[in-house]
Image (cartoon, rainbow, N blue to C red):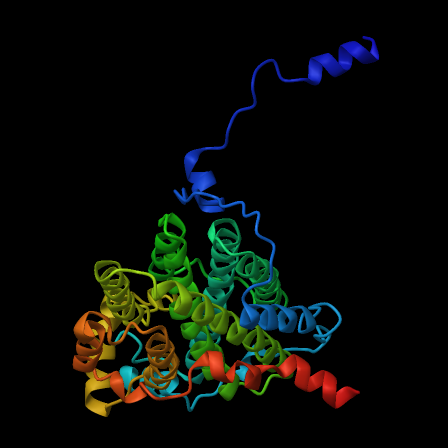
Amino acid sequence: MSTTEQIEAQEPSGPPTLPARAVMDASFKLIDDHASRIFTWNYDRERDQLVTLYNKAMASQWNSVTELDWSIDVDPEREIDHDTPAMRLAREVARVPGSPIASWKDKEFTQLGIEMLKGNLSQFMHGEQGAMMVAAKIVETVPWIDAKYYAATQTMDEARHTEVFAKYLHTKLGEAYPMSPFLEEQITVLLEDPRWDIAYLGMQIVIESLALAAFGDMLRRTQEPLLKKLLRYVMADEARHVAFGILSLGEHYKELSGPELKDRQEFLCENTLRNKSRAATPEVWERMGVSFEAVVPCIIDAAQRTGTSPVASFQRGFFAKLVPNVRKLGLLDANDGYLREQWGKAGLLEFEFAEDTASDFEAYDAVAQDRAAAS
């Protein structure tokens, strides 16, 4: 057989066979965003604050390969703090009569701590990929060139964040967890909505404020040097992203009608309630060999009996950022104070006059701080 005949014999006779749908669904997700792309011909730099923020973003880019020391050895067991609210609550759960973890010893509680850390970092990783996709959508859909420029730098930031969380999980801790269905739904809604400002509101204001609180909570608790520096650098970027949202939406919302603003207020009400639901971690318990349905009543019992909430400090951190940022946008008092009334019932107005992120984002810039210290 000639060489040509051998090649022809190896070539498929028909079109390639696609993988089974279950295989594709496990590998990727298709989302239709329904949004029009905007090509602008106005290249004038007309928004001074966005120009300043863009210049800051360019100067504060960091290299995940050269500026993080990946040679640091990480012992997951050594990094678990057994005195966190979540770990104290887990031990109380074991004391509840009939608890499915009544027989657990220190070994199991330490492993639970490791799985919780992996679970949190996994959601950070998935959330950062979602942020990368939303930022890319903003590049395509926002009408102002200054906003397109900045959103492009954010897309690069989010790619770097996704990369470092994935690398930390895969090289230091082990197998990652799937994306939380609550987080997946939240980001899918932003990608599918045709309105460019909803992508901003949901990502830059809600999810990025959430991320700052979550990263800050982990940063305060960890002593592991690689993770500590990684979180400091990611937070420096995220604070700029929130400031970007405040500056852009503050201008846009001055032009919207009452009904349009009401729709944004309803969006915020729904998303703040949904964020409270995200505290559940069924996949962590399942990986520990414990039925989530069986352990939930014991968790509720232990939490009520001890007055312990594993997410209280995180939630306070989230709303301490979200509420003043939303106030800065004018959404608290639009439509006769509709959102003020709703959040007031939930006890969130105590955070109204905390410093907004557009005012304090430079305080987070660990990249600039480290470079100044090294010079």
